[in-house]
Image (cartoon, rainbow, N blue to C red; front, side, top):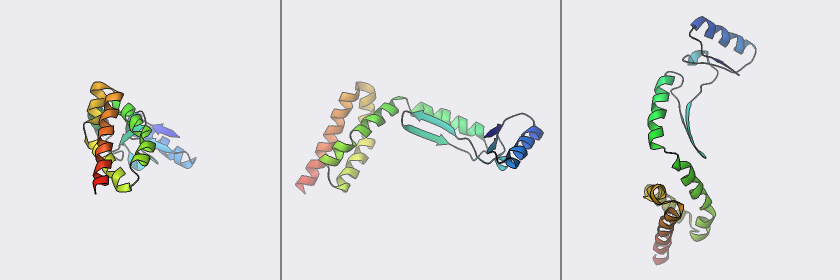
Length: 143
């Protein structure tokens, strides 16, 4: 793999042509037409990965968007995602119907569970999530 990121268009073109001739994957920064791949701007929060790409047209814009999203996608999202993942088996047991599980996960991610997690920790968030699970289960049982 090769990445050409010089200030010289001639050098970048040469690297692109040589890499292509030798069967080497190449990225020419700011020149998607000379590239065999592009490099997205990435945010990682544990298992949560968000990639922003402008198709090579403006890496600076991708970087700016990433910086703005980093303000929203705070580090706690990674730990919260781990918590949600750890609940999957329990949710399948407690809510056997697909429509129940869909309603549950939709409500959890649209609820204040993440803010509860950030403010008060995992146990408090788990309590909030359990409340949602009980409500979803009770609705199904009353139908």
